[in-house]
Length: 624
Image 1 (cartoon, rainbow, N blue to C red):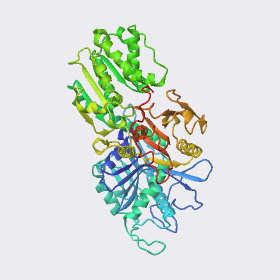
Image 2 (tube, one colour):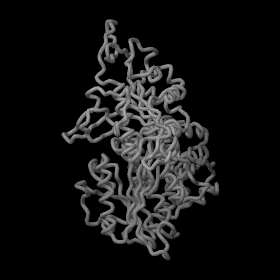
Image 3 (tube, helix red, strand yellow):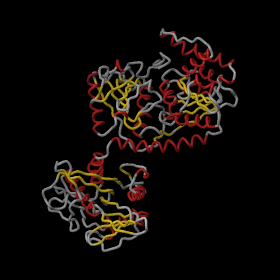
Image 4 (cartoon, one colour):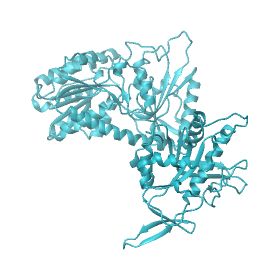
């Protein structure tokens, strides 16, 4: 398949004709690169000759019509566009303009034929001449290449028009357009052949031209690489807002996630007790929520629980679930969603127990780890069925201790036949959970491995895979994305300035601030942003508070199980218990599209945070 820039879902292209051509271009051989919706800006020229023609070069077909380009803002710049630029490493490039509908050409004017409600067909002049658009784009690309390299483009070039909904064109064609340079609906089925025919009939045979130094360039890979990477792609990115690219990524990831979710649900439909193991981004929470929805629709009382309070809040909202205190008065078909400790506290208090949370740290830690789960087990072991559940789903199961699972099993109305699902990532064990217990099979459940990354770009997935063993690595499914940004700093003030600079760049590219989450192993008052209330005039607020027009700040562990389009992973310092490989893996894998990692510079002899593991990190304080 051809390399498409951008890589879109065809259903996201509004124009029917462009959608047909994009779909056909995707099926071209691998060596093609196809840019869709190519926009460009050039300084205006005093000459009256064709845009892009320099040094006395000319094309007998290339006399442009006025109005094919527009001036913007009084700056003298000229803005133009064409629908497609199709490049081939051996042949060169073709600029292609697409017009949908039924098209005809008469007396030097292109017309679209439209049908009225009463069946009459009328001709309407096109507002833009498609030949002029394609031709001007071709000369613009030539000039951009020459501006970049100082020499003419050495391969072939041409322009063409495509009418994907027409089988033939009536009327006498313009003299500036060869017959092979018109593509119709039938040509889309054999687009490679049609393009080769155009390349073979190029009026401008540029292969073999000499550079200013006299060297023969030929039709080589170097010119093609410069054309795509330095001429075409940078101009494309200039006119594609970052916000738009993330929206496109969201649509593609949602489609992939939905398909994968459906596949997993169907494959495991008859399994009532199962542990799902998967790395970050493999869709564990989404599959867990879909399991909960289906069980609820069958009339069952379902418990959805996890360790992280913030994750429980988000899932409760998404599922429209209820809290533990409400469930005894609910009818059939309900999901109760709460983090494990809140579930026990609310249930025991509802049952009349006096449950006071200790204030002293060491006593409080023991209370949540041992005493509260034991009290919960004792209660549910004696309680009647009205307190219990038909089905239990545990997300982020690696955070749970072995005795907590014993307590959960006591909550099942039917321990033999009730559904019991656990979703876990062995790489995210930050709190000293019982991942080995889950792997051992002692829980009496079968195991299922999730292997496809449905959240992150390929670049972020590859970065995350460097922190896990090969057996547990996920395969990227969603193409696209940019490399992970790693920035180093030596002092907190320097780090703060780097963060402000990079956020400023993203905002200038059209990014909505709400897409940004800043994650740190420290609380905000201990981070490099302790004295910062806003960044470039945008309010910085603490998670779990939500502000639609602000930038979110959270600790890595409080954001565990959640995700954000853009993540700034800051305050990464070696030699600290909160900065294990697992913490960095958890924090970075929250990023869906863009990831920035800010690491303190260390002497060559020092062990950096990215390689240092502290086995006891995060075992203090059971609740976030």
